Image (tube, rainbow, N blue to C red; front, side, top):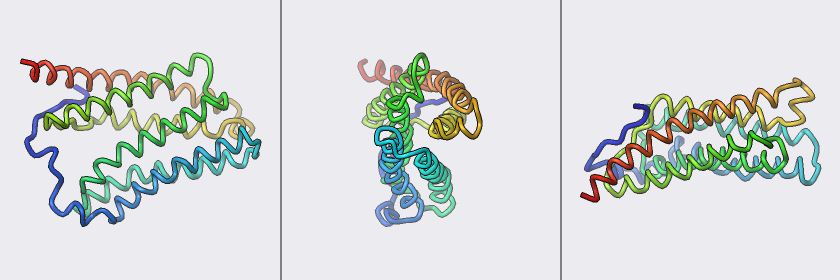
Length: 213
């Protein structure tokens, strides 16, 4: 099973001392990822809609890579320094979803993602909405949903695919065919998204049936 739900009476309770870690370095990294979302969107908007030039694609990519790197270090440092907190656990997955979802929408608007590839983006966005709803439902039942290794690979592949696509025409001028590579990675991540999303749904449906009895 890629992702399994387990009941835990203390899973919804924040760790002691969590408030004291609100301004810890791991949480600051998570905050910075949230701040990077509108900045990346603005660069893509300026580059395409306002015809700001290809250089803004590279600026968007630099901001995106910096944000993606914080996705690794915030969790790693929080565990290494015992600075895990409720706000960090809440914002970390939200920041990831905001970054990927916003970039997918911007890339669809400028035509980088178009045609059949739009369905890959739709699958990814729908899965994120579904999983967010299931997590909220399971949290009320005090059921934790650990993230599997496959789900982590899915997230990593999504981040790489979106990063490649962000380069757009600027990337094509440097390496012809780079957009095709990005779209291929996007489809692969969409398939993994379907699998991990189904696993979430199966776990949530099981607890829903148990709750109705």
